[in-house]
Image (cartoon, helix red, strand yellow):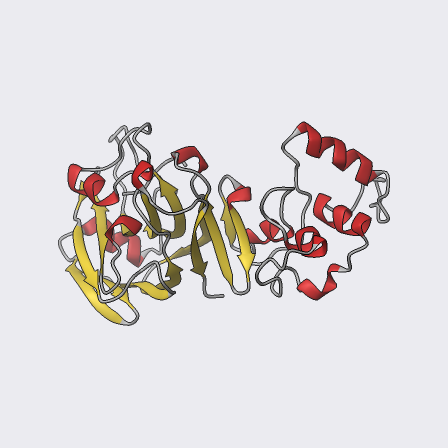
Length: 306
């Protein structure tokens, strides 16, 4: 099941500050800008300006890759911070090359070789984001390393779609989609259940639970689709947990043969105040953010092959 609503390095771009207080700070910092472009505009983003004002040399961060855990220093916050106090330098890195973040860029930052997506509060609008690849794929193996977000109400996903990554709620147009929906609510210390799905025709679901022998929220594991013109396989760490014959599913076979499938990753959540999504079995497996016992924000991580 894929939601309409609500990682990968990139050269740093300007980041907007969202509160009036932050806006005022940006004006003050702009007065001290030491690097301007041909139009006279400041060529540094707000976080770089803040680092400059604080006297911090941020070159050691290597674009955020060396930040590690917060050591409590002002320079760590200026160079690496992505919590209260402003947007992070690493937020700009959640889109790179073929991959683009769709919304809520403040919900994503880079940590080493992983893209970390946050669910900031127990309401859907504050939970997660979606990233898409501009490349379209067909036959072959397509994989992502994933550490899922924990607890009830949150899903960490990897999927392929020929419909822009969206679920057609009008149910008027056919599309093909292949899903891993990793629900924190279904994770246990020794095993986890994962919702896999294949959409064909007009919102026709071919869903199946698979069970893996580990906690999907504890560490990274490799989730992959293995595609050819006659079958689709869902594999985890190289083990095939589900395989479907698609010889009678012409739309799926055609999408693979013509490389019409786009890759997506996302984190999203649902509370009791949000409209429900999916069939009853799916909703029961997902649970509600209201019942998530973890301290928020909670996080999922993605490692996308270059």
